[in-house]
Image 1 (spheres, rainbow, N blue to C red):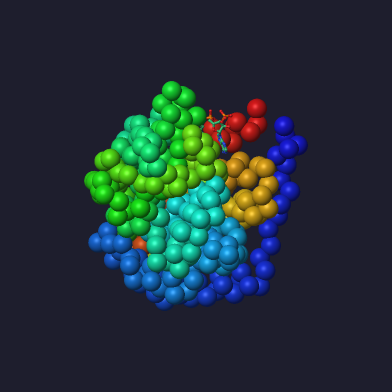
Image 2: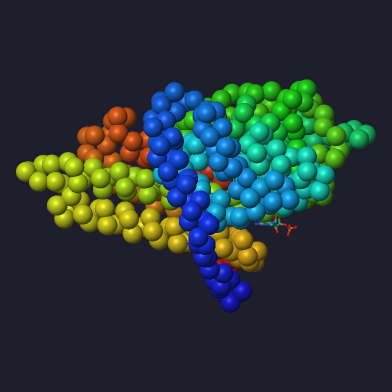
Length: 387
Ligand code: COS
């Protein structure tokens, strides 16, 4: 078993990736960073930044050129997510969801579905959502209750999903539904696209969240929603594998967001420690602060290496990509939580107030340990490859 999961793919950063990273970094410093506190305070979806990202072709990053994308792969996409998350985790989520909500179609959809949905997401005109979780089915999506029944050439969908990113913003939802209740849990689930303008679809409760407040999350409601049979993604009753195959790749977006948050917090804390004077000198001259900063930088760099390696695995189609993506998500999110907590400590009282960005970064970091599979689920996924 162990030999089959040896790491082999490695990553490289060609000049065009570094150039694009520089362009994004500049755009983030000039346009995203000044908006981040306001987006968080008002819990406002940043339509202006979505337009900005579209004008820089960032929404093309998840897609192949034949579907209007940049064709630059998973690593470049996640470098972009990381750069945006250094300043604003909510804005980074706009890119992440663009991948999460379209991966089912990219990986399992028909050519017709790819032509219908992907190019308009690649321009940023459309934004998708991924509707798997339910009020009583989070870590255990096999226990979902949303039902799709076949009626002639249509699927009729009834149920309520929960914790869905992009609620009310998304133009279409990839909805996981029970299509064969007798098949038992994971074997009777199908993935079906529901466009937001279908009759019977409505936006239910929107959550008030601790972090990622600029991204709407909540309950989409499907009440007798009818969609054509051709909206089924992949094979009937094989939707659980669509969900798992998607999450195996999309979890890298969470890892990238976490690395970005951690780097943003480290950079801010280091700059603050250089300026802040106590006992007659900059606090950066005290070893207690130096050791904190050194540890923050080191853990963030280690998380980035694991993330980039996992991206290379996805781009190379290696069989152990799911294990690496789970490891990257686990390690990067725990790193982001630890690093941001330390950043608040470096800033002391100033770290605890909203005038400074590190308390927001700490709140934003928390979700990366939870969504797209809790870190307990990541450990389970990793452990299963070892025994
Ligand atoms: N890729 C493809 N297929 C997979 C897979 C993967 N990564 N993981 C499991 N499967 C398949 C299995 O091979 C099995 O198929 P067969 O029975 O035909 O062999 C089927 O899916 C069921 O697998 P399993 O029995 O392992 O399912 P479990 O219900 O035990 O669940 C975990 C496994 C815990 C890994 C899964 O429920 C999970 O990922 N939970 C977290 C969900 C999540 O991330 N939620 C966040 C919401 S999205 S923001």
